[in-house]
Length: 417
Ligand SMILES: O=P(O)(O)OC[C@H]1O[C@H](O)[C@H](O)[C@@H](O)[C@@H]1O
Image (cartoon, rainbow, N blue to C red; front, top):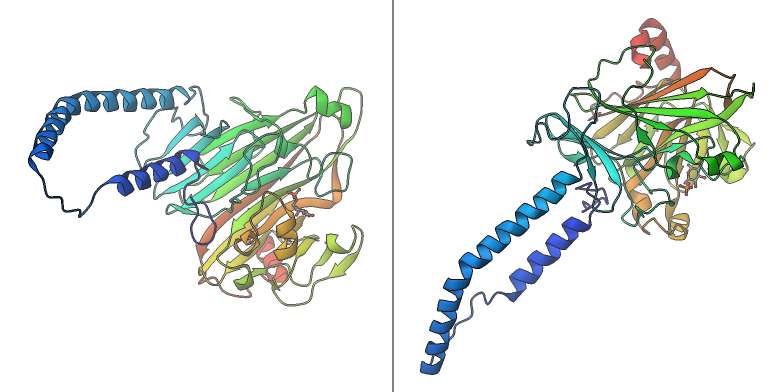
């Protein structure tokens, strides 16, 4: 179900909900509300017969429905696979009450497996094992990520929305498929990942791992392990940490590009401003891969199609939604660039899994390494991080001037995430 901005209200992506709504409508349409009926004698006999039948059948139906409901609940319980999960110590089936922290692994109605992390105050995230893709991020039960109303949840297609992991390639330039294969492959939950260099304070998380399949290695012959930790802070911040290790045994270098293509949900793209990218150099994919331009001094606004990569971006930028009075703060580490994409009206119509008007309610922005691919020697590991929070827009305009942010992060390294 989507709100008026096209953002998912429920991230069950689902058929279940739609079926329920249809059932409710059919039920209320079938009821003779307000009808006045005059009853003749034969009709009275008919009515009393019907009443008796109804009285006899009610207990039967009640027991039938209660059995159906119980069977359904049992089926739902079956798909909550045990032996998750890591951070937190909350295993499956523990504390599923509304508002209490929990972690569960379930099969969605579309047949794909997902992990749901919940914190207090309606804060939650949902991650699909397919693509290692975060598909929902809610704060106070409000959806913050955009998912297309036409998104296909059918492998091998990527899911249009949420946060796509683009690896080992970003965009169309490279030897792998467009945006790489990570978003169209099944990741696995990793119970005991190698220790992180710095300990994370956040306790609610899930660790995923992707190893290229035999099939993939034919197109892209590089041995590696790609890890992703998706973490949720009690305050609702979403933290993505990726690690890529070159596991080559024949001395081969591993070179790759990377992006967290994040579909932010916005009220109206014309009312959105991005701060922190002004004055930076950028590549404009609409004008050819290698053309370099310099952004003017003002914050970025949107009036037409945009497909850019800002180079050497500061550790924090802000996406300000004026209509919503909400600001997304995006902090990054290990990823020098920022991708910005909105297809606008014409391109949106040409994209099969995007609604014609969807472009108004989404903006893709994400930390990336595009201009200079990351190169690892055998045994080496790279770590990249993107941390996002949604705050009220009392955020000071101009606070994210790149020079000031850089200065702030030197004086206080914790602000750079
Ligand atoms: O349609 P997709 O493969 O998901 O790509 C969607 C968009 O993602 C990126 O931002 C690229 O720079 C764009 O060129 C591309 O159109």
